[in-house]
Image (tube, rainbow over all chains, first blue to last red; front, side, top):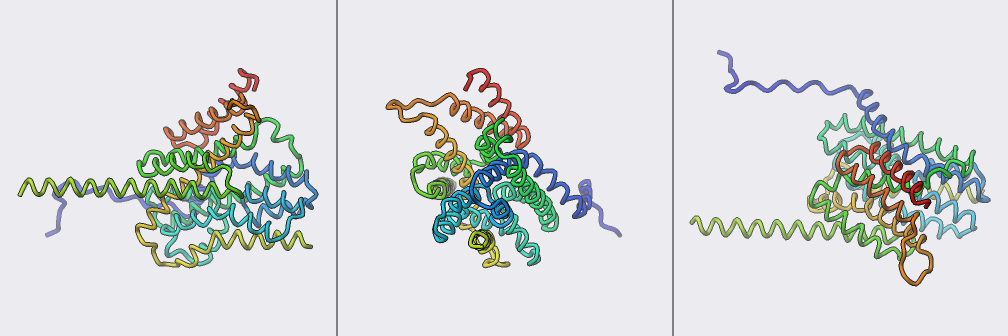
Length: 258
Length: 114
């Protein structure tokens, strides 16, 4: 006698799309962010063009450093003839946030092949982190997530290299229309705003933003990291208090019922 | 040659920062409390970057006047970013947020002559 469902049997889950389909979805998801990133890349290129740094050396930062703010600092310091230790320290501090992004995505990358991890780490920067985190929140299979992230990351990488090259080629004509600082701010705020839906992250974001304004004077952009730490700490304390209050409320109810 | 070496070294340092956590952890998990803390920290970094950038723009626009006054250009920039942020928070769409933000910037710039 065959077993039957007491309730209507749930529809079988459709088979997941193939890796190429998922990778293309990741690439498509990255396109709007590229619209925000490209002008910033053009500014980096224009900065290289306006400096005494060799254009090929300047452009090579787009695939070695692969981070706009760090590249701008590197080109500026190279142009000024800064000592190597200052150059490396500055870029390291600016890029310290990438270690935070890696730690945030690491749980979703567990079990991935070594070659994939090596490439994924190389492609990790603000837009690829944000899209990767958003996609991971939809509870995909590990293979889906890996394909999506690679599609998004590689699209960003190619677009970034082209944008930097275009900036070197045409100088500041691209940036005359809209300030590139505005475009990168719009891109970053559009990545972080959806996180405001969660109370914990709302607290972290608001406190971090307020602290960043107060800590603006800290050197080498360290104010950003300190502010972010303050935001995350505030959210952690608030969550702990809420949990303690909830546990206290539950204890009171159990005492009353007994 | 020195510039090429410097850029190469910067690449190594940047990659090390991106990969050290992942490669050290391997298949091990972070403690749950640390995982949650990092999950709060990452968006806080993005928020701090936006706020810091806008604050610099506002300060640069206010110049050295004794009374704090926000230059029209800086006010337009803040308004544009807020508009884009509102759209992103409601729709979750990066494209729409960028579009609304840029349109807001262009319209306000025209209106105020900033």
